[in-house]
Length: 217
Image 1: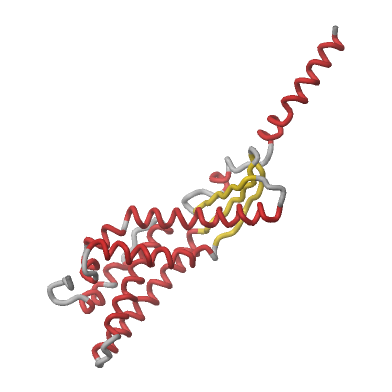
Image 2: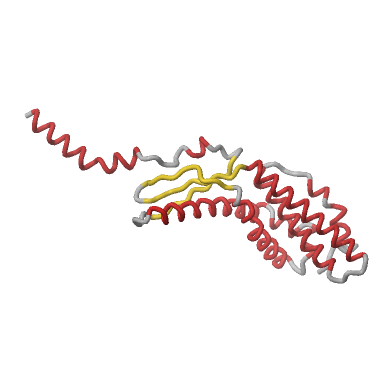
């Protein structure tokens, strides 16, 4: 009788073992405890197992990094685009929709810069999927955004000086650089989680870029 019970238990363990292994396998449920949101932006990428370990790993890593980029873009779009286009900066565009489209394009192009600062911190398998976890340290990324914002504002100021000296194309480029400066500053706020005072620092530049009635429409 005891032998029969033991045999039954062994069979049950064999049948259930895949599930047990899957549960015990390294996963990413605790990744946010290891990399808190106050310090990091976390991205998780998953891809189905295909038998090509190297390809699976690389695909998961790319998807994890893209998830970080997506988070930044979504937050900027939901929290700042309308504000920028309804404020004084919107006067740099012929209409509100053009403003949104152009700012979104700048966001799409600029956010890729921050992906260079991401690092892969975990790999594993879960439920037939291969996953990778990427993190972006908010501190260095926010400093990079600040540097880019200041550089773009500097280019805008230089363009204004050229325009005043008679360069007909310089004003147009100055406005483009100013849009980039604003966008990078908003990215800095999103990444750092801290409201900055750069907007006030841009006020003099903004006054020179906008006509007296604050409208180019």
